[in-house]
Length: 553
Image 1: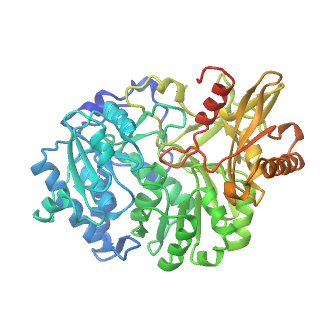
Image 2: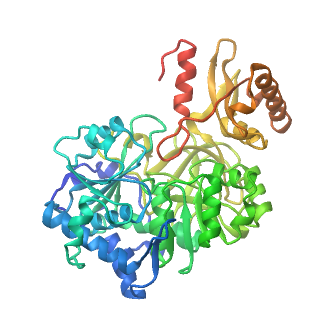
Image 3: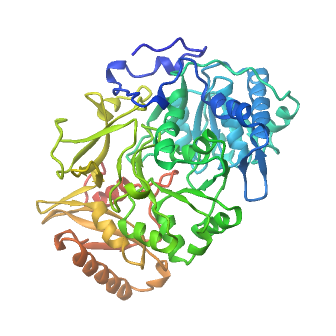
């Protein structure tokens, strides 16, 4: 594939793309993703929307009553872009780190960097100094725009020659805001190529050192023009909200790109418990929600269903959606949760289903524009019903920045996501496990998520993670880390914990094959998670290996 002439003066990103023979095959099979050679995704989402619909449509909302129209966001982004170019010397291709929680100030900064031809490096506000130092080492940037409340760890990261500019949550209260206020509200957008890199999105570290995934301007629009267009089907009058950070590509799509692609509004929430999220949905008349399965379960379990009456769409991703959670949410609200699998490498969801196409328990079918198959270790497609590795192609695909793991994720032109699936004769894909979550115990292959789903069907289990624990007799046994619904205080002593563990073990034996039950259960107050909210099962596996005196891989 021949790349278009780049608008980037700083050629770092193009210079560090993997060789094209290591890329996945990119498919542009639906008309929506056949983009022109020159394309700036920020201009398409913001400037073009203002031209079509005017300045006054609601765009960004916040719980404190903040309301920005599309015109307000355009003005703010243009002013910040002028600061970036005129005062900070940004040239197209420079990387700019963004750090802050979900709020209008962060979104304005995101648009400004892209309009100026920069490359956004979004980071989770929960990342600490060591993690930020690693991102700085990989991304090689010298400019950061940071919410003024989250500078401490960034300053402690010691990123060489870094210029740090602060902003306020709603566009006031930081150095950047003061400079921006003095600028005109117009800007000459940089004419980027559709295949210029727009963003370095870092994987969230479920398997160790993060990888920088390189996404083109066209990629940002492609998931809106496939999953959102064909499956979610948003409307201009929708109000979106959710809990995933915008720095997490699930959140970027669900809270910024998808609503703005159709002229809808988004309620940005910096932080919310499930109960608080339900209250915000009710108060603001939210119609589309993006969050994790655990949050949907918690909202129903705490009696918040009546507050969700305005929802017409609810998307679950980031973790496997247990069928029990899907059924409970449908029964309580009448809304069919839209499950989906995506990845940072692919930017967003590529297998899903909605409405009458949903089969509870199945992830769904390939989103229009994508194709998928299940393959064995040699890359051969396996028969329907047989588990294997998920392989995907579409208009987006994995391009790691100067990382040898490109050869692991992309094989024979296919994105190998690291997930084990089966496909049924009707083309539905059924999640089995992460490929490294398959437990082999006494010769049996046991799917960790299957055990988790059995445990999660109990009301007294808020969340859990199942891993392999080394065992001398069996090689490995199934171990479950369980967060009880009432917290650890509900199990005050060893006797009560042993009794509850026995109840859970018996329950698992009653709903799935008895050999799959967790032989060891440890009750914990929380599970280790990445800054994007994914459970870090590799840490639990390492802990168990260390307990057994084995090296932590």
